Length: 134
Image 1 (cartoon, rainbow, N blue to C red):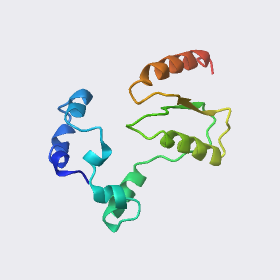
Image 2: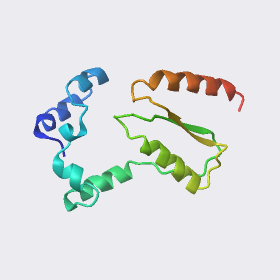
Image 3: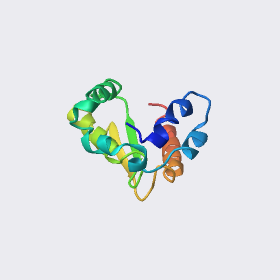
Image 4: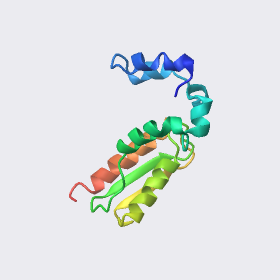
């Protein structure tokens, strides 16, 4: 699934010996640089990716009709995790019958994965403080 340069490194990088910053230093931020062209083009329907799709699906959670408040924050220009993952999850919660009063999707306009950390942290602490007696 990974281009050769990274395929050889990945098992060692994720063996628990490294902190996140050390792992990040040895990988690229470019998805086409990290993932093979075949995977980029054929992941969704290619026979060679069936098992991977199944494993990832088994490892994923689905939205549910919850009574617990949940907030989904996401930088609108996040280049690590596509913002659509949060907006799609919000829609999945709504389709599962969750109340918009309980689930909120809060896009962090103009923020990346990194620059959204401080606004997310401040908003989360303020929100937790507002519901501490929930």
